[in-house]
Length: 389
Image (cartoon, rainbow, N blue to C red; front, side):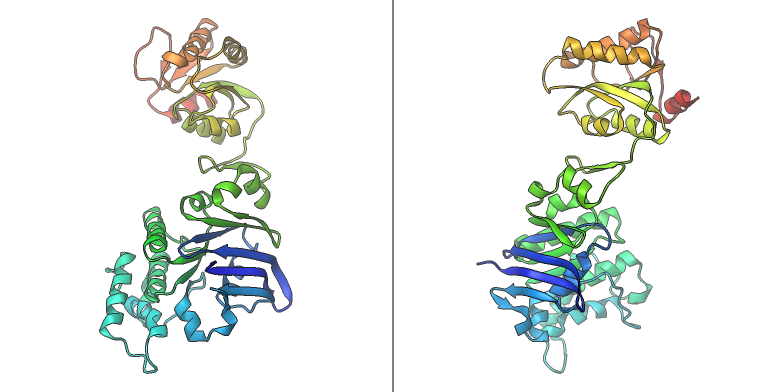
């Protein structure tokens, strides 16, 4: 039986609908991530699910029971919330803020028992908040406050956790740790988690299901591996320039020039940093010969004026080498990234030799000596400065 579902849910403010036809179904222990541009309605959906905003229409059910039929206290036992709004709890310590998560489980007196404090302490430990517990909440940084609020949600022991942009204000270390915590809660504690994220690349790594929102409508819903594609991200976020590559999780800025001046011999992940350095300086370039399964390939396809590609795990075809040579003759410099030139990469050695024979300047990041006349560099920046000059 589906644990949590929404059916034809309409969310918005008063009678003004922000997002219509929200239909999701989650099993226990599943994680749902909401994705979409700022202002698309992610927070409105979350606030409606948590009843911070009254739904305009449709249903929200847990095990077939509508949430409207639950009392406030019973709903708090089912659902814990971390929203983007910053609370102002006066002079409360961080530990005391976490402890408020136990209120649905206390008696009318609100008195905390030893068992409650065990759960509070465990929740603080989970978010690595021991050093924060005796500090005044208002004195904490935004990232530290976020950690304490997540500890509060964990402390509540609800079956459902709803988090609005939980990774905001967090450095990379705690961002990774937080997602590990949430994944562990979903697997070991069978928590159903609904959250919004801005980091598109993180969603396939943690979510069981994703909801893409565009212009007040659900663009796609399903497994992130199926619905998060280069095309869907371009459409949802209305990307006019630049790109997001869903295969490798990279954002690339648009190319600045159209006339190539340089040919980059890349492969094995050695050329990606060169591509970006050239693009930052507005220097157009050709790229090749790259195998389609090479780590440099996706970035090159985005930034290079033209990428000469080859199928993976085969020798470079003579026609591809000939095409690359034609491009090299149009350039005043060739950059050698230091990729291996043996085996199936032997064709790239032929390109470097061709460039030296034609008097084209060859700039190399290679460590080993070759019989070719190459100008060696120890840093990409000095190489790019030379080209720019």
